[in-house]
Amino acid sequence: MNTRSVPVSQRVFDIINIIVLLIFGAMVAYPFLNLLALSLNDGADAARGGIYIFPRKFSLDAYVLLSQNHKLLEGFGWSVLRVIVGTSTCLFVTGLLAYIVSIRHFSGRKFMRILFLVTMYFNGGLIPVYLLMVQLGLTDSFNVYWIPTLISAYFMLLMASYISELPEALFESARLDGATEITIYIKLVIPMSLPVFAAVFIYAAVGHWNSWFDVVLYNSSGHFDTLQVYLRRLLLEVEASQQIMDQQLIYQKFNSLSPLTLRAATTILVTVPILLVYPFLQKYFIGGLTIGSVKG
Image (cartoon, rainbow, N blue to C red; front, side):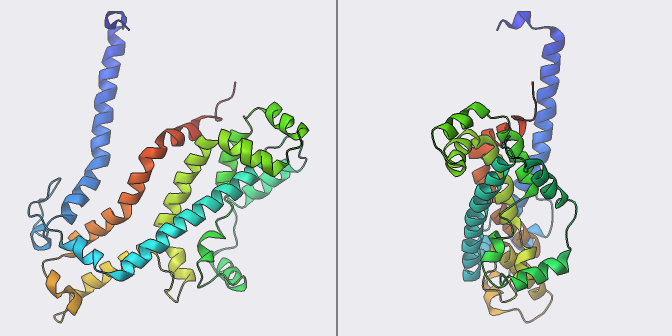
């Protein structure tokens, strides 16, 4: 395009838009960079303050301490397994439900939509849900992480909005050729709905990765504690150890640590895995949220 043909007002708008986006991007990136600098700084030096983007006195003590805790590695494994199992099963089952309520010749699809929509606004409360998990035998087991999240009403509505925009003639042709509904869902709906599936994948994976309350609530034995629970527990132990004179032996070689640096290190450790996954799904994430929302 010839830049001379672009109006001056348009160029001014583009420049202002770029400047605003750069400022906004810097505001979003600064807290993460500050945490990264704090986590890589010596604890005693970090307590003085004045650290912004770069560490003043480089130290890996916080990460060394985290890596020496075998419980953290075990919790990391449970967290990864929870994300894989919980997200994949939620995508498949919720996507199947979204396809069912999008079938035009299914007479009960409107009733099912309303039924699941009601669950978004009304629930039994914490105590009834806990008693239900006990009665189902899901407490103190890994199954409590993924079975209750098999179906999400919000994800179902989001995916159904996208699937309903797919050409119905394609599904009718498959039915005439003898394909079952589950075959249509697996071989047609899923490949054609990858953008919305990727968007839901991000939401579900982040939710499973950051979840910790249900771990504390339903796994009192501690056998299936995830990474977030162990990091929270470790941070509380370090803070408590600095308030007493007789520190535990495990922290003696890390006497330069401070709760500030360890808190920053734990935040970085929890955040980085999601940041590494998001760039690969960003284009599908944006497409899944926009395609299907505008008709005509």
